[in-house]
Image (cartoon, rainbow, N blue to C red; front, side, top):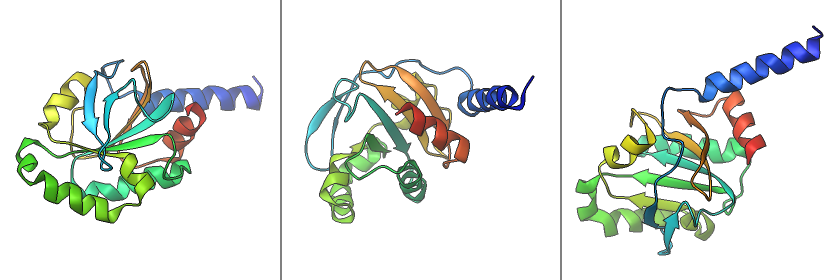
Length: 167
C-alpha cells in the first residue's frame, strides 16, 4: 500500500473515532428558541445555514471553548454557527438580567447567533444522547435536522478539520 492510501485510511479512522462517542440521536428534535437579538426561530428548519455548527454550552467557564471553536473554525460573527447556552429552568427567573448581560458582551451579529435555552439540561441532552454538561458539545446539523457529526469538548485539530470540511 502506498503512503497516500495509508494516510487517508488513518485520517478516516481518526475522524470516525473523534466523532464516535457512543449511541446518540441522528436527528435534532424541533426546538423553538429566541436569540439574544429577540428573534424567535424554529430549529432545525431555521438554522442560520444549510449546515450549521451548533455549539452547546452549560456553564459560564465554557464560553472560552465556545469562542475557541468559532475562532478555530475561522467563522465570522455572522457565519454558519450558533451558540446555545443551556442555563436550566431555575435561571429563567433572571432571564432578562442574564440575556441583557450577554447582549452587552456581544456585537449585533453574534447576538443573532446566540441563544439562551432555559430548560433542564436533560430535556435537550436526553434526546441528543449527550451524557455530560461538563464540556461543550458541537453538533453539525443540517436544516432537515440530521446530525452529521458531533464532538464533545474543546476544539482539537482533527475535530476542527472535520467540521470545517463538512460545513
